[in-house]
Every structure is written in C-alpha cells, then in structure tokens.
Image (cartoon, rainbow, N blue to C red; front, side, top):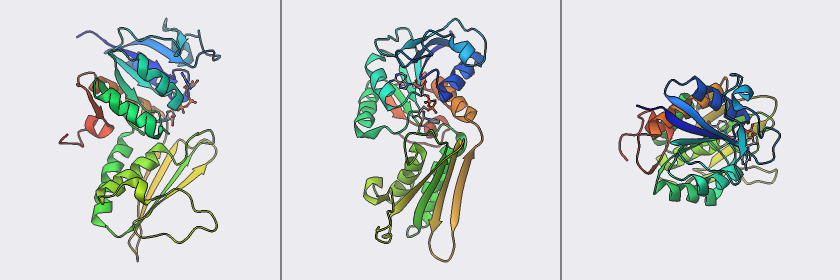
Length: 269
Ligand code: NAD
C-alpha cells in the first residue's frame, strides 16, 4: 500500500509542529504539505526544521489561495479562521480537525462537508478524555438529579473559554439525560447571579501559566461528591491521537466521526 499523503494546517503552531513530527516519524505516512497563516514569519521555512526533525523538503505556505491536490488527509490545528478558509479548498481530501471554539456556522459547515467526504472533529484527541466523555455519560445517567459542575484549566494563551473539551464533557452529560447542553449550560456566575437551578451544568475556566489541559467533572447528588478528572501531561498525546485518527479516517466513507469511533467506543452509527 502506498504511503498516506497528509497535509497539516497550522503547521507552525504548538500543535502543528508536534503533528508534523509525528507524521515524519510515521512509517506509512508522507508529509505532503504544510500550511500556515499567509504572511506569517514562518512562511517559507522548512517545516521539518521547525518541528525539530531536520530538513523535510517541505516549506510552510500560506493557506489563503493554497491548494490541496493529491492530498489524502488534512490535519487542522489552526483555529476557527483557518478552518473556515480550509473547508472550500479541501478537494477530495478527508479532514481531521482539532480546532476548538467553532461556533454554530462552522459546526454547520463541518456537517455539510461530512455529507460528501470523511470528517473527524475532536475537541480533544487524547485517549483518556475520549474515555472520560463516555464515563461522564454513564455517571450523569446513573445520578440523574446530581448537580454537575465542570472545572477546567489551561495555559494563559488559550483563546476560547470554556475549553472545547469542557463543552464536550457538558454535552455528554446533558445528552445522557436527554437534554440539549444549550438549555442547561451556565457559562458564568457574576456576583448577582441567582442560585443554580436543577439540572444546570456550570462551567469554570482557569487560565494561567503553562497548563496543558486539566478537566474535572463534579457530580454532586447531595451528601457526597464524585469527581472525574483528566490531566494531559504533554501535547504529544493530542498529536499522536490526531495522527491515529488520520490513518483511521483514510479508510472511511463520508460522515462526521469522533475519537470514540476511532477507539471503538461507538458501536452503532
Ligand atoms: P497556536 O496558536 O500555537 O497555533 C495555531 C497555528 O495556526 C499558528 O501557527 C497560526 O499562525 C496558524 N493560523 C492561525 N490562523 C490561521 C489561518 N487563518 N490560516 C492559516 N494558519 C492559521 O495554537 P495551538 O495551541 O497549536 O492550538 C490550535 C488549535 O487547536 C486551537 O483551536 C486549540 O484550542 C486547538 N487544540 C486542540 C487540541 C485537541 O486535542 N483537539 C489540543 C490542543 C489544542
């Protein structure tokens, strides 16, 4: 079988560099292209050098006006603006995206793309968080009246709050109870906020330092407290998961997939 041709969008970023390194190390993948923000300082630089692997013969090119002909899978870690620019130029390629903070319009655009090509979006590519999403659903169903609060912490440069992972955890809890997250989420508690109401899911975002990714789901049925918690020790777990997802997605037909599919936690679709 010929090597999978993979392109990376947001290739000069914290996640992009790790994904590039993981592709260069992968025995069955070839790095086909590396794209970044047009006019950025990294444009024209060899992405293998940026990723700490030595020259790869692929330079970072601007996403704007770019093309992805001959690429099998694109891995995106650029952000909402980059993903919006990427969707119209995907051509035949499958898409793995880890961009968070999407908003309704971009979610809808991803779903539209999934009707014609394979798309895998995950707010968190770690195995532990994928399992946590499953466990939170089990716990929320088993404790239907428990108050749920989600606490997350990330490094000081993170743009979106609460994190995409925190929202995914809230969605898993709400949907396990037959509710839509939008109907039960409480994103902030200003000083004059009324007391919590039954079934509400509260979110708390801590920002500072170099925290990679910390998530806690508190379940408070009264008289006791259950906390389900995950800590990412380094970003490599997200990069490895995204590359694993790309290898998996290349064999799939059109559809919108998640990491639970890759790890076999979803049995029916
Ligand atoms: P970063 O700022 O270090 O990197 C983003 C890169 O994308 C930068 O090089 C930037 O120049 C580039 N970029 C931005 N806008 C662009 C555009 N319009 N066109 C082309 N390139 C553009 O950020 P990061 O920490 O690597 O995170 C990137 C995204 O991935 C964020 O949305 C973050 O929340 C998300 N993330 C997801 C996971 C996961 O497991 N799903 C893990 C970590 C981060």
